[in-house]
Image (cartoon, rainbow, N blue to C red; front, side):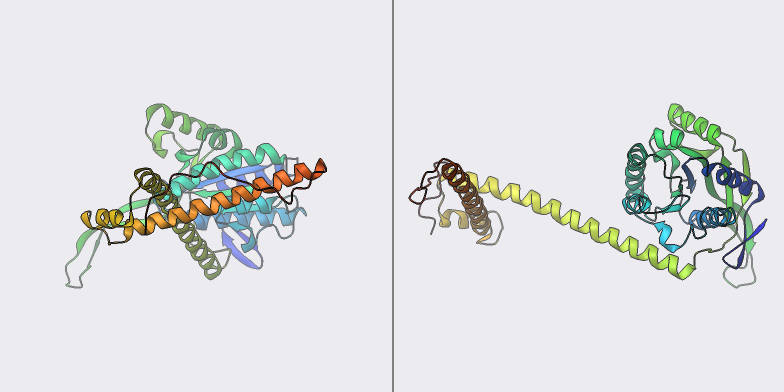
Amino acid sequence: MKFKWKGKEYYIDGFLSSQLDSILYNVKKDWDFVLFITGDRTVRGGKSILGMTVCAYLAKGLADMGLNKDAYTDKDIYFDNIDMMKAAFTKPKYSINHYDEGREGLAASKAVKSMGQDLVDFFAECGQLNHIFVIVAPDFFKLNEEIAVARSEFLINVYRKEVAHEVDLYKTGKKVAVTKLQRGFFEFFSRKKKQNLYDKAKTTGRKNYGLIKADFVGRFVNQYPIAEDIYRKMKKDALSRFSEKKEKEKEAGVSKKEGRLRRYLYAVCSHLGLRKVDLVKISKDNGYGVNTIYNQFLKADQEVRTEREAMLEAKKKEIDTIKKEEGVDTSNFVETDNRNPKVPINID
């Protein structure tokens, strides 16, 4: 069937629109709804496009019912679940929140697991916002049970079809057999069916959407209720931020590990009383630059001195505070630190 939204005409499957009508009917009765759209454990199947279509249809319904005249714009698409949850608190009732997990592979799996638990915590704290959350994720089976079964209303799984085809691929006049991949198909699992699917996958160890027969199957078309160029730029920017964040986390992890090793080196060298010439020799014997170990030692020494000075300063302030409260003049107090580690002898 066709529907108009913001002056343009779009297509949506008739059986799917009926399910969304039920969501619209009940949301005004103090309900929140979580709707999942997944991609059959594959990528590039069109789940984001179907997600936008679902959101546009819901937004049209909310406007027609006089509940929210502008429930869905590009500002309501999120690629980070934390951003979505923060924004949800600032929105009016009957708003739409569209989360699109744009990452792929292992990164997406980790993100979906985290998102599932975050949503559980979010709903436990926020009460009823009367919002509709449309979650586009790569894999239903990666979700924890509470959000996958108890908290979500239904599951739409997008899949592709493989059709045998013959084509003159190399322009030689001779056709070759190929497999043509077709987008635009989905299967719908009601609350009960998706629970059966999740349970069966868990008991059999088989993560396959074909374990349970869907309530119905349908088609969708390649359409962008949110302008394609805007959506693609948003997704590209989000993926760029994810990459930058990952690099920073990686660098932080390496720096932390290097710091621990440096402190260990410092403690060993200090305990053995090694000199600079000893550290230079160890570096050369092990194929490092002549001053590599020595420079790491000096860096660790500076870190220790900085921490020690900060500790002494904090201790002095604490004693000053205590003495002032007792009316004692602390101007002539001298602090000592008896916990200095043994330092190398004749390091220069």
